[in-house]
Length: 518
Image (cartoon, rainbow, N blue to C red; front, side):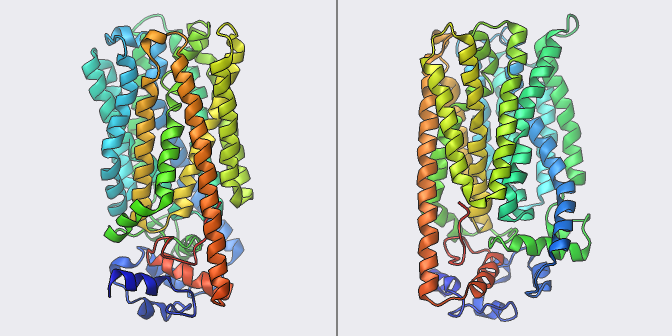
């Protein structure tokens, strides 16, 4: 069967080519085993029966207790680890490693060159092999890289160290997006994703406290070294813990009974995306390239991350430029972390309570960031408290970017397509983070006017992309509703057929019963 004819057969509405019952569906699809989800055997055991809501909720709580703590701890550590140079910069990092001119800015960018290079290999590894082992080994390795940072005493040594750290941390975001999609319904994903992503805010607060504590050390090693030693040691422990605790998929989860595994798979099957398929599919790879959502998300991620360096690698330097002392540059980052934490948790709760407010929430968060960046551009340089509050407002940016990740976990189907779309999004993420530090020109210190203008432009482009994405998905949903109505499709039949297609690894473009979460 040609690809075109196969797609037409697969994407017909219930009552046409595809039967709506599971018993008949394998024959009607005429698909190979490689197209079946890894968890298809468990999916079939439910045999179209309705899930017991009480049992489904009990299994959800069990999943939360096992999966979320690992995601929360690892995401907290990866944020602290990659931003260790921010805290060290206040205590002599540049002098201790003999950095000059734009060297520090390049260390921030080089991390994302490593991230960029490793993005696609990790995407393949995460799809093909066991997630827990891939992530755990990467975390263990970056802990070793981080703990060796104090041995670097030149730009070349620091650059190599940062490149390797970025390459290894490239496993986390795509891996976590896959995990969220494997274990949770679309409506449950925003709050769960924000529950680990909000650790960026906790890390900002916690890192500020660690930085403040290190600032009071009066003897021993140079103070800039301590953060790397502390965070690297914790990451090594966390890598081993991840391999031992994190489950790979519902079908292999040892903490679930056989009956609970069936419930876990059936819950996620309702997303119409399947759970996981280990076979790389060229047709899905090509579809990634002509899907408008791919490039909207790419531009959105690039624009979102251009301002990111201001809130990570350069936060201590920026706060110091406002006129605060060295210790003040550490503890005055804590309110920004609190803003980020509260914004992420509140936004996650709103988008879980009202599933089709994701794009609207992104727009609101980006608008607040635009106000903050505009104040950084326009306020007088002697208004240090006004500029500090403006910087804190920019910490809303994490909410907008994290919700763009739910667009992949909830709105992209087909495992190969999901992984490649995520890889392209994070290519933009790397591009923005490479560009961002270069806007902090050494000859503009301490005011960095060009960097604040770049922040304002980035937030504005990101807002425009959120609007375009919303309009695209809204009109696509309406078009599919009209087509289903014209074909006389009963909603229950359409849903059953759409779920079956999802478990056979069809993409959201091919599965006409799929609807976008807005």
